[in-house]
Amino acid sequence: MEQGAELRRELVTALARTIDQHADELTLLDQAIGDGDHGLNMKRGFEAVVADIQGLSQKSWPDYFKSIGMTLVMKVGGASGPLFGTLFLTLGKELPSEPQPDDIVRALRAAIVAIQARGKAEAGHKTMLDVLIPVVELLEAGDRDLVSLVQKAHDASEATKPLKAVRGRASFLGERSIGHMDPGARSSALMIDAVAGVLKELA
Figure (spheres, rainbow, N blue to C red):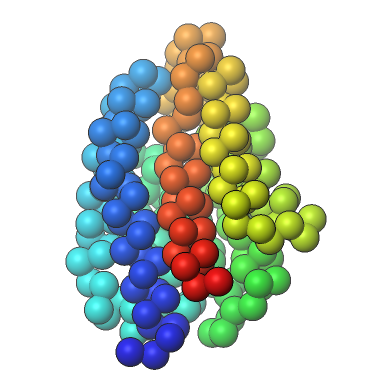
């Protein structure tokens, strides 16, 4: 198997594994301020993604991300499917066939813009963007250290606890959404951690 295919296989395996391992935790977080099904929905989505791991790993990088995005849109319920699907679909649209580190940073910024447009959310609204934005800002500042990026992601997800939700079902709770971590932010941090884990093994 060529190196790119092996990396694609390892990345999607790591993403599916971490979502599976944390599905109950994500569901509990969502039970506090949402529909209570975020973990199960994300688990179902990544199980569908990884079911075609052989075919997926053989695709080009753009088609690989587009396939993941389409599967998440179709298989993950609620708002999470379209939002996480948009993340991967935009990466697929923005990345060249042989992406370099600067291409990835640029594509991630484009994905944030697309997610903002779809969800009408901004930083501080207690969403997945509260993790993605600070991580991309760190990358744009030139910090490519994987340990720093993972720490930033987890710190950012923790930092959603005192926020009042402005978007999504959690916003219906108003002040009662304060004190709970946003499940989408937690999922985002876990996914960044999983990707970094694969990349660290290659370093």
